[in-house]
Length: 118
Image (cartoon, rainbow, N blue to C red):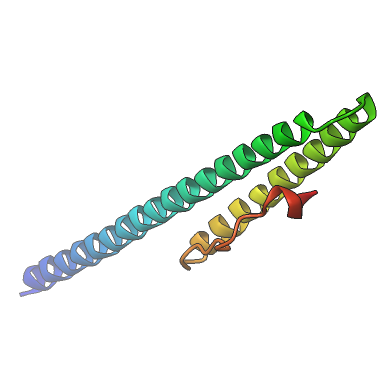
């Protein structure tokens, strides 16, 4: 009888371990999927923002009348680009912090336009 109790206790312990392991693996998979989705969305948003900034700067360069105008456009483009990198980094950090805490990553719906970033 004592052997049956030990066997039953060992079986329950193994079952408990398997349950914890399965739940942990499931949470890890969910976190990876959420992280990949957040990264994909933010990378796409960042790419689109930088493309728009580049296009806008090229259009502005066409209208330049002097070297000072060119430098002004380049300075505004560089400021917008720097701001875009900073904001994207912050969105990445916030998204992954939310995922690590078990929440769904949320990124703002509207990307910053070059005129807003300048």
